[in-house]
Length: 569
Image 1 (cartoon, rainbow, N blue to C red):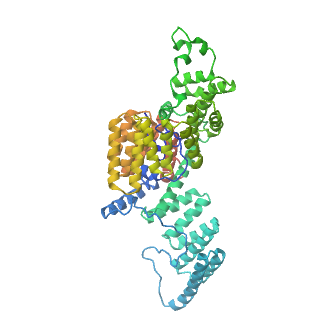
Image 2: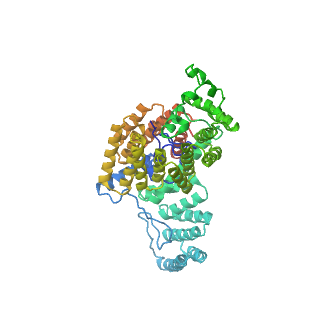
């Protein structure tokens, strides 16, 4: 049965083999960098901002829940910071000093405020160059001891520079504003966005982390930016450790889990009697077909022996010879190209199979599913949707189409359509444990985002029914664990991950999930890193483990410049 995976890939079991950053359930490695609701569900949004930040967020979340819960996520969803302002957001306790010289100072300050107000009118009219001139005048007029007002003028000028996409100037003015008013959230967040545009990821992370803490992890905009930058930095950290590593075949456990998510995939079916080699067959016959010296049949034999490294070369022999099984060989070769993360090599093979009008419809549909999954990984949802829809058109009774399209719909936030696809998959394949588990996940997500407590309870009950009906389905336990984590039922979530490990002790991704849980639940960095290191020990090809380790390192081991926790590939 399928393996557990990071939530960002949990709903994409086997949809897109590729880079290897997200694994499981037959899921393909990697899902790209889309900002997703699932990350907060998997690890708690502020998790990787550091253990201290986790504690702060958890304490404030408990306080909010004690006083009543407003929306489902507890986040301010519409806190755009685009316009200039009349006053700064001062640090607690700061104010305007008054003294004997106040009348003269106020005269200069009044003139500065007038220039700023004029600049605000230009800004609202979209005349940003004129606004910048007015804000510059205000800065020149403002008494230097008026820190809060002066910080406002710099921040407003930065806002105008932002509209002109002058990111260096934005960062410079925000720096001035923050120096004058260190807790100026608007200036910190605007500088974070400028650093993102300038590709200064570490500086961006520092600023957005400060913003998240100052806002008590209440603002979705800040949380999504932190999420995005952490993921990018984590990937960079991982790449530093294995940038010279040759593309490697995933572990046998992963490959078997991947293929288990397909029920109508001809190339993953056991060899027929007439395809087997002489020594594996009855002595009576059918040797003639075997003597064809088919590269594809040899590749199939290697699959059964779990000798996966030889499959691409044998398929290439069949393709070069334009043999009897050329279409099958193209699809099998493309699949293994995807599994090692070489989408560039996989695409021409998939294109060829799809274009072969006389090929078995199951082959063409499977190629469309895999190409659609590849497009989704590459963040091309329109092309992905087209391929899944075409697969449904040419093979409407293929349960795999609805299973994998349902996963795509979840990623596109089309939850009702996802549920409909999972229902169709279940109608065609009533014993599809994966589809039933992922349908529960979709229903849970729908209830969570709608803040519907009764539907959340129903979805949680649905998970219990799935694991009772399919006790050997690791995916059911994994997805249930992610929902339990979101509901802060950490102990039970830990038990679910232990069930996954019992079922699939060689599945590295489960250890990564369990390690992340330790960080959120107990802020136990050592135990979390121990479990993630265990994942790498089990499968040194598990990119998800490397990237997760790298993401944690961004916050936990940056001081001193040494990466002491990230193992070498």
